[in-house]
Every structure is written in structure tokens, then in C-alpha cells.
Length: 132
Image (cartoon, one colour):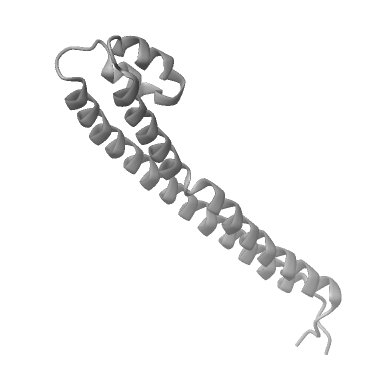
């Protein structure tokens, strides 16, 4: 059995650190759809508050915060509150689907990086000099 040396232990520590850092970085991407949904909810609330006499102008002013929701609200026909409620429901569904896709991608990323780190560790152990 080979005796462990500092180089081998250091390499294995870095292999595990890469997996840990991948998980850590994924925590920044995971909440993005929720944060976008909360910001969009606030913008839709602001549309209802500022619509007044010219709701189309209020929507255009909030277009950067509304993104594709602005296109769903325009042109204004019928009850604006009902249209905002329908768009809010549709927006939640879109962002929920985005959150699920992001979570799936992150799970695959962590699995692949873990497998790569394990393969590097196994290869390193296979290359380690054997002492009798």
C-alpha cells in the first residue's frame, strides 16, 4: 500500500474544494427566478397604482422592470386589474418553469464536477508510486 504524501493529499483536497465551490456558486444562481418574480410582482403592483388616466404610458414607463409582461398588458382592452392578475399568474408559471430548469442544470453541473473530481482522484491514486 502506498504511503500518502503531501502532493497527493493536496491534490485530493483541491478536487474536493472544486466540488464545494461549484455548489457554493450554484447558490447564487438558484434564487434568481424567485428574485425576478418578486421584482416583477412589485412592478405589476406599481402598474395598478400609477395607471390613472393613461395606463399605456404607465406600462411603457415601467417596461424595463416589466420585461415581457409589458407586451402581455398592451394594448389595454377591458379591465386593467383583471389583465394584470392574468399576467401575474402567467408570469409566475413562466418563472417557476425557469426555476425548475435552473435547478436541473445546477444538479447536473454538481454531479458532473463531482464525477470529474473523483476521476482525477482515482487517476492520481493509480499513478502514485507503490512502495513494497
